Image (cartoon, rainbow, N blue to C red; front, side, top):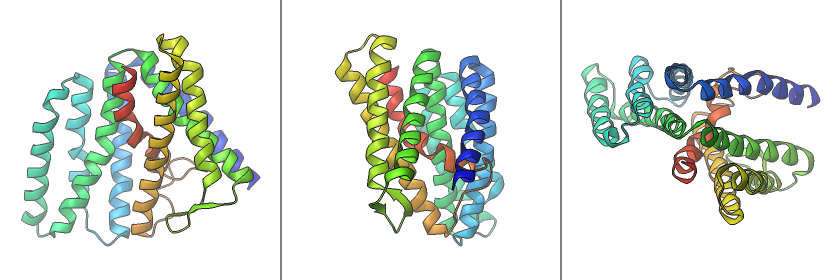
Amino acid sequence: MRGALWLRVASTIVVAPFVILLVWAGGWWLMVGLAGFYLLGAHEWSRICEEGGSIPVSWLNFFGGLPILYLGFSGHLTMLWPVLATLVAVNLVIPPFIGLSGGTVGMDLFGQVYIALPLSFLELLRHHGFLPALLALVLVWGSDIGAFFVGSAIGRHPLSPRLSPKKTWEGLISGILTAGLLGLLLIPPWQHRSLLFGLGVGLAAGILSSVGDLGESAIKRWANAKDSGRFMPGHGGLLDRVDSLLFALPALYYLLR
């Protein structure tokens, strides 16, 4: 357990500063970095689909979410619905045209939106400055850290044995409270908001982070996959690392911009 913990900490120390550097640089640097993360996530998503019995169109998964990421880079959020409608049309036409089933359509399209759309909100948030984007990352990462360490140390009551046997109620509550505390301490002085607002945003980030984590656990349970990949030692795949962000970022965009 201790070896796995230190491996998890070491991989976080390597990756987290790189992500923060990309967010600080913004612009094309962030766009290219998130596109790389998306492509890796799309590869993991295709593997999860295969393990779940679906036959993904890998190249469609790889490229389908990139227009959504470009919307975040350009700031043209009003074009989101036309782009999503186009993605739906492409995903409806391509798989049947090459002889695949309708089930593939839904899984491929879901993966493209599930990964790319939240990442685009990080780009959109970066348009309002480095600090709001950094706050969003800190709140979600803080929730993950609080949930992991407290859950590992004193967790006794399983949260959902069917979805994730290792997650506990103690970890869930500590993760939400950690994010709430960070929001209370950081948002008022950094963004000149009220203490109540900071606490509320932090708690919302903690709750949505937990929902995102459980959501990805449900997907892996469907596919009978332990991890989405091996991108980060001690964590698993990229999707295992960013699952909390995927649910929290859209809400945090509207709260922190």
